[in-house]
Image (cartoon, rainbow, N blue to C red; front, side, top):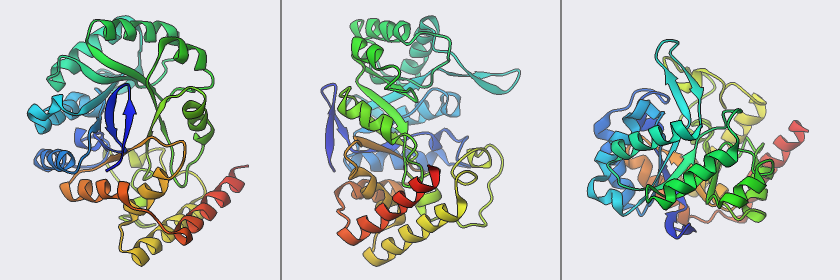
Length: 315
């Protein structure tokens, strides 16, 4: 496993993404499988576990705490706040006001069974609250020992650069994948100009690049892949061509498609850690290995050609 430093913390370059274990956005999941997956992550050298209070409405945080047990104080638990659930309308809304931050933080500390959250992140802008107000409140929480470091998720680092620098945020989390490079410029700026640790999510494009699904795959219920996601947006012909190339490289090298994609993503100079969701211990073990896999020149060239072609289609 490879590691980077985030605010003095040893963070694995492959992180365990905890959205799926919330049991809502990625189909049915068994808590017993989740607990085994968390244990496998620890055994595989993964030290970063990324969750959010909205994942399963707290269930993800609770299962993570149970799975980590006493080990929770030896790893970097990162959680997020700012997406709220309206029970009446049964829909989400965003709220990152300092007064709500304190309420959300208290609940997450309880769910995670922690006295201090290693990395606390603002999940999304609410387009109302000034970012300085939020980050200043987070700095007070850091001074009070409630969080060790704080970061942002889904914010534009170019637009908010001055505020980020003034308040010494540690990280930024944005989506990036082989078939969706829309945030590349933002990630490059965050890493090179602001010195932020970049935490990349949606690397497997909602599972699109995992090789587990076909053009005929159908999703149902609360699975987010029934909504706006990698399975229904973009150039489908080119996206599936990318999947076919990934699967062929995997076949030629004896790797899994996910390992191919993770390894390629980690080679990008603006990538700090990749957050990969998993439901089983086998998936976790395979994902962790990817950090130490070096794809050959031919494989990297083939994947680079796909990215270049997709970029041309976007311009």
